[in-house]
Image (cartoon, rainbow, N blue to C red; front, side, top):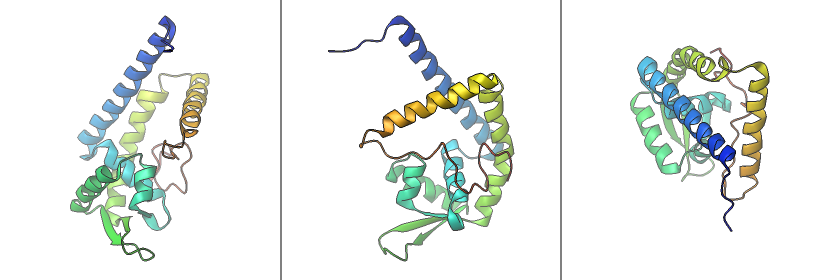
Length: 173
């Protein structure tokens, strides 16, 4: 039997959809305007900057960036064209590939980060009180936890940046 949304749940769902869509579209427009890269490319560069030796297996990078392998492969090809990422053969598995952030890619990320962080602050945190920020984090983590309890949902490590050299929340290159 279908558990239909009540009126309050429907308003909440639609507000959530509108807010997330508007925030991501605005951040993407700003990154395109200011840095010439879409948010998806920025995310790939961030993930590589956080990795040891600025390198990850393509499969791990796809999981961490919540991207399909084919979409990631296309994005990495574009990043290679820009000189921001280099693909290398995996020494442990000749069929596997590693994506490595180049110095030029790190410089592009460092140049993009301040405006992006300002956009995140302006569009997400400035409109909220400190209590609302805490609630947003707790609600978001509850959704991530519930979804990741499903074995068909790929892992998401977005909540805890590791060894971030540049992170969209750190405010520093």
